[in-house]
Length: 186
Image 1: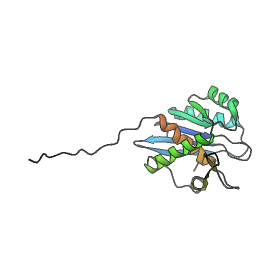
Image 2 (image 1 turned 45 degrees about the vertical axis):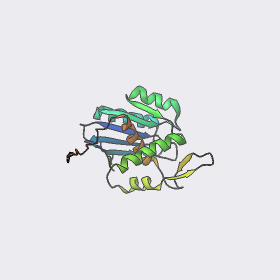
Image 3 (image 1 turned 60 degrees about the vertical axis):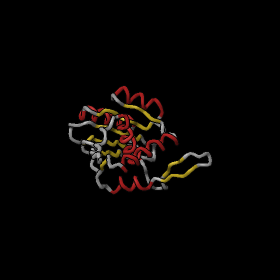
Image 4 (image 1 turned 90 degrees about the horizontal axis):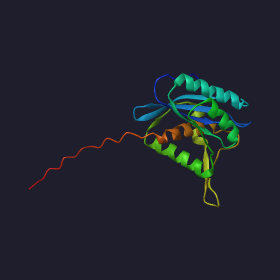
């Protein structure tokens, strides 16, 4: 998916996966479209991009879109210092430490939203491969552990999943129920 910035209007939610040395930093942006969320922007930074570059990108994105309700950033490997710098530069940035239970919550919510067809995304091979390559296993302690095979990445997956999870605090419209008229037969 191209790294062009989406239309300026709408309500947006962003997920940020910050990279270490061997991974990619990724920013995913969803736009609320009626009853669904559409992936409208996915930017994969080159390996080795400094955190300050990603933070400046978030600032430019925030200024351009104006209505990003929430940035949800994985702070697992980067710690508090990077998150604090991001929060000084960009409003609405929240950090999440992706522990095994938190990862399970994030991916369970992604699965639910996908099953309900409330999230839409384009056919883009690298992105789809990352969605499909993630593995899970049950540890001896009963926790679900997530991983990906050697030589693959899951950075797009986590940025996307965090963007979807960022929408969780938004109330969804009530489902339209069909009205049934009961006929009283005497």
